[in-house]
Length: 152
Image 1 (spheres, rainbow, N blue to C red):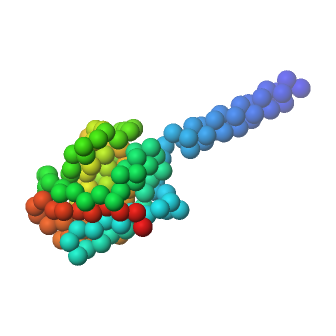
Image 2 (image 1 turned 60 degrees about the vertical axis):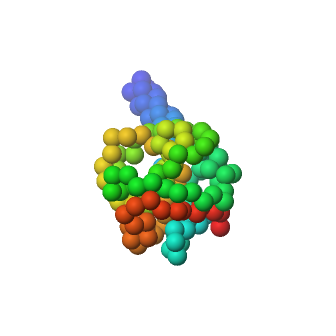
Image 3 (image 1 turned 180 degrees about the horizontal axis):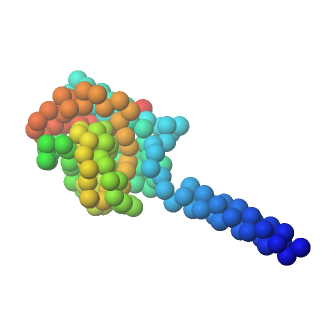
């Protein structure tokens, strides 16, 4: 009888642990865009891109500032950035790899649009990801550029 009881306690413990882990992961990590949510329309010159917005406080605060037309500065041959005049809520973590089309917050007020993929050791808070970033490099060009963000 003891081995059966021990085995049942063991199985129940595994189930409880698995449920707790799953809830923890679901509740704390949000690393995929919410495709059911409103989309962003990002325009640079005559090129327009659609982006899926993440579900987090940073993305919500950013959407509240839209529409927004800004002059983004070139940096490192892989990103454009702009220092927002206000801080947004941040929950930064290291993504490991930046993907072309990522729109992220660095610190609490630097908006960054990445147009090339690369590994990183820096921490960012995700805001949105361009659905189809092909053509993004040529659309952004080599220098500073005016970019318009608006809700679709």
